Amino acid sequence: MTLRDFIDKLLGRQAASANTARQRLQLVLAHDRSDLNPELLEQMRREILEVVSRYVEIDLEEGDVSLETEDRVTALVANLPIKRARTTPLPASVASA
Amino acid sequence: MSRTILICSGKGGVGKTTLTANLGIALARQGASTAVLDADFGLRNLDLLLGLENRIIYTAQEVLAESCRLEQALVRHKQEPNLSLLPAGNPRMLEWLTPDDMQKIVGLLEERFDFVLIDCPAGIEDGFKNAAAASREAIVVTTPEVSAVRDADRVIGLLQTRAIEPIQLVLNRVRPRMMANQEMLAVGDVTDILALPLLGLVVEDEQVIVSTNRGEPLTLNGSRSPAGLAYTNVARRLRGEEVPIVDPSKEPQGLRARFSRLMQTKIF
Image 1 (cartoon, each protein chain N blue to C red):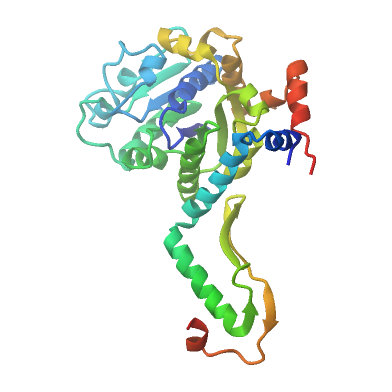
Image 2 (cartoon, rainbow over the protein chains, first blue to last red):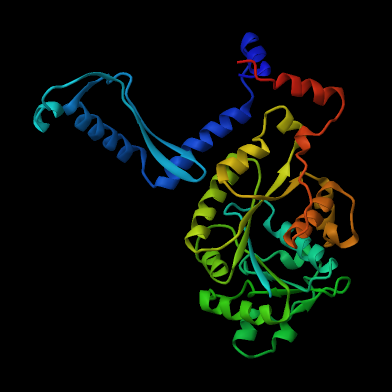
């Protein structure tokens, strides 16, 4: 946060728009470059969580799967906090239920 | 060895044609024989910016059909004879040229000129594909606005799949004060996002409109206006000269600028 952002916040003013522009661009470009629409991404996210949760118990509230992009390379980033490992993996049908 | 450079942007109205006209004249003034090819024949405007609109008789299409020679179709600039314009076609033309046609025409131009600049139509459809088919390098023009940067990104992706190399960036219509106040994407934001080397930075300059009205590019009379100097520097860099790029939003501009830099200090 810059000094200006801080003062803007204190005075209840809107933050400078360049930051918003950069963030919106990075998000939209990650999707443009990967050619994945939000619906497909959401489906993929659900399936990844499903598979992972067969092996470890994960915090579904905190879990996040998203696209990030840097230097024209788009990466799928999954951040899934593990609560505890399962000693034996659950069968696919149970986890998805 | 001739260099064929595509000047493209994806989005319309960001300054492709203005860059092509000014860069063409600047290169010619620096002693390089230069041809500018208007690949946008549906909505051609390069002739107008160069003040050559009344001198076009033939186009690349007649050359391809062998109804005239290349020399007859080339429009040589009177004040800057090192520069010639070739329109790809005329607006009445119904059929698009093919990528093969473009390659043939550019091949002919490359025999005669040091630089061939291709003014690409906006969009990423046939017009773009034709123009890209004949190009070896590219300059992508963008402005520090979300829509222009997004479209530039699409175009860069398409150029990279065609092995066009190098691809360099010209950031146009920069407003230093807005940038300093963080109300416009910073130069570094755009170069980071697009991951291209910066070939030039052109500030918003009313003189561009004045020069367009007259049909005399700023570089023609060695204008000292900010945009004129910037275009001349783009030409110098293109020819391999080391000319530093100054970020105008970081230039010292008195108390106001120092205050706005203070406001940008990262506090946490």
